[in-house]
Structure formats: C-alpha cells, structure tokens
Length: 233
Image (cartoon, rainbow, N blue to C red):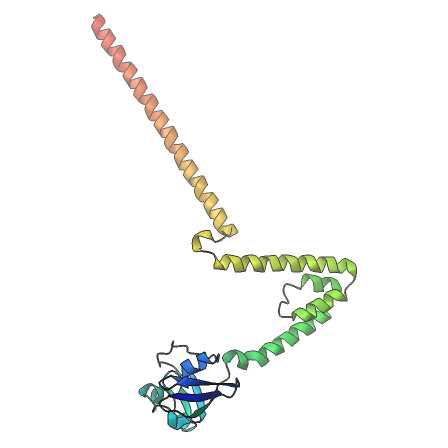
C-alpha cells in the first residue's frame, strides 16, 4: 500500500510506501529536516506539524510525549523520526522554518550596515577594505569596480585575485589527506628549529666521538712506549 504525502512549505508532493517514517518520506521528496540527535528521538528539532491525515500515522511514542508538550501535540506536531505512515491516504505536512531562515533578517541587517559603512569610506580606503567587508554582495562589489577610475580598477582586481587564490588554496587544502596538507608558516618554522636542534646534537656527538677516539689513540701509544721501555731494561 502507498500513501500520498505533501509538504506544503516546500510545495513537494509524492507517493511513499506504508511503513515509511515522515523523516524518510521528506528526504525522498528532497525536503531537508533537521535532526540534531541523528534521528534517535532525543530532541525535537525534527518536529513537523501534521495539517491533515494524522489518522494514517502511528500513535505518539514515549519520545514524542517527552519532547513535545500536550499543547504542541494537540496542534498536530509530531517528531518526523518517530511518526510512521500506517495507512493509505493523503497526508499534508508543514515543516518548521530552519534556523538559518530565522537568522536571515539579522544577517541582512548586518549586511546593510556594512554596506553603508563601505559607501562612506574614501575611494582609496574602499580598495583597502574590500577583504574586510566580505559581507557586501558580489554584485555590489562588481558595480563598484565598473564605476571606478581605471587606475583604481587595477588595484581592486589585484586584491580580488589574491583573495580568490587564497580561498581556492584553503578549499583544496581542506580536502587533502592529513599527510598532504600544506604546512603553515608556524609549522614550517617548528620543522626548521627541530632540524637545527638535530644537527646540533649530531655535531656534538661527532665531536665527542672524535675526542674519545683521540684519547684512545694516545692511550695506546703510551702503552706501547711503556712496553718498549720495559723490553729495553
């Protein structure tokens, strides 16, 4: 048997097999639902609201009664990792806004603040501040480049090129195996210091071996001299 399920916020509709959990049904339709506890029923981040078709779902589990208040359950909220489709029918689901969506207005306000600060800067300082004002939209940056004098454009492009190169290198380095990662200046300096210490230790050991060798030769010569004198007597 199959059930038809619709996710209203994302405007996704599809058919899934009876026995499927709402979380899995969402994934199959390309709907992303957060699950901080990795679907173990230990949090309520995967909660969704069942608008209709709740009768086709399994009853509330112990985990759901622990993490969802009676008022929330009465409104039709379920933990998508706990609610299983048990009957054929039409089910309509409303997902909650993601955290990043809720934080978007605040981010936009900060971006606007950066943009205003950028516009008030003198032309030369705008060039120097491009890397610091990364929050400015790329379109705004390109617009500034196009409308800048030619002698300033060269400086801007150099800054952007260097910035882009650094980002590209960082991205590549992050994907490399640990043994192949690019060493930082601090790590290189530490390696150089270690090599210098090893060289000093090796040199000291060589000098000691040479001194010990000289002492042994002198002792051997002295022994031979004594033996020769004894033979003469």
